[in-house]
Image (tube, rainbow, N blue to C red; front, side, top):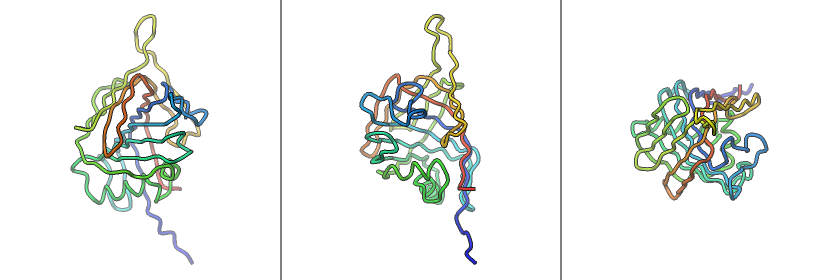
Length: 208
């Protein structure tokens, strides 16, 4: 009898997504970017509060993906550079590499991992500062993203906006605002202002 020996994994935490779509990111609805040139370029942080891959503990790890697709994500042809903190162990990096490239199955990475090639890995201190939707995600020496809540055009007060996707494969509820990001790493050089910024909580695992 065949035995299922697939490595079990789970990542639970907080996601910080900056991309070059207009705020709200039409990829979540139509599957196609609302960027000026139809590309998808992003700076996405994952702060893992609870996590494991086999017997490797991933709790407390923070990673950033710098992503560059020439067209819609599902059209493929993308490149990604991963950023991890200097104290991330080689075992943790190996686990994240397998998860993020879809080798261990489980969404969203079983889907996303087929759409890009890995252009590099960089170690740098990562900080996440702020509260609510006023957040700054920084990879020291490489770049940062800064997001704010929408503002009421009359009063200037913060204007709450959420996207709820019951069948979303990356996240199910995103808190939306306006952000800007600039990053250069391993040949990828991205810089955008007043574009999409979404905060979400994630709970990803191998196919159950």
